[in-house]
Amino acid sequence: MTQEDLRAPDPAARRAALITAFVSKKGGVGKTTTTVNLAAALALSGRRVLLVDLDPNAGASLSLGASKHELGLSAADVLLNDRPAIEAVRPTGTSNLDLIPGSVDLRSVETDLVRTQTKELVLRRALDPLRARYDFIMIDCPSSLGLLTRNALAACDGYVVPAVPQFLAIEGIEPLVDAAERLRYRCRSRTVFLGIVPTLVDHRSKATRQTLDALRERFGQRVFAMEIRVNVRLAEAPAFGNTIFEYNPDSTGARAYRLLAEELLLAWER
Image (cartoon, rainbow, N blue to C red; front, top):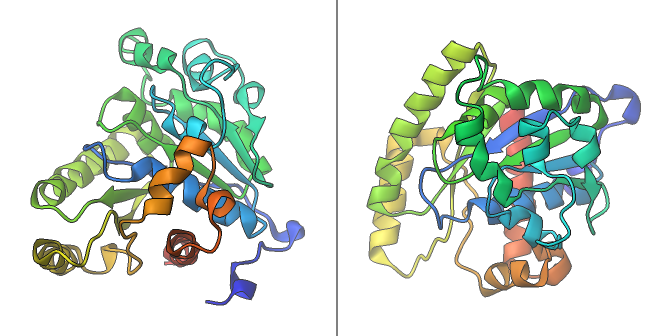
């Protein structure tokens, strides 16, 4: 796929946004880094992108330059206080990329929504009015299968699992996929499993290479060909409130996420 292929479609041919959730049961796997930089790569290609930060730690929001003390309305206001999602949308420093910030108030979702009869469908209903405004909506989930993540899975069209090539991380993927499948039937959602992104890959390690081989043997084409390798620039960028494309656009990390964005587009065409 060339840069020409990655360009946004003609506005006249636009359809409702494809919603992608980034899900992991384990923290520290590069999930937020992947969500933020894939969203930025798609936005820089001319697509209209909204990133929804469902993590109470607000890592995606901070990575996009938002201040913890000046987040304004957040995803918590949308889920808990019935505020229209459009009111929580704010621009970022990247053209075509908007954000609904996360906040610590999201921790209340598990307790405050638990008695709601349709507790897993709140986000789906909230995002529906925004689908016509964007080409892609990307959801950064907390590292758990709690109510926030289940809302994301019920709302999305497809989900991606970032995974470090380590034995325990890989063993957790099948239970996650099984749980997502059960939720799909229960909520009558349209979500599909788009695949696994290997992250924090270090090919100098024999154990890493062996685990990657086992991952590809086990999940086949569900594993993205593009691997996100351990990269100093990727690790540094969030501290400056930058995507990798702002921080170091010529780095190997930036190139990796451009290529991964191309592969994600192909996955949506399958």
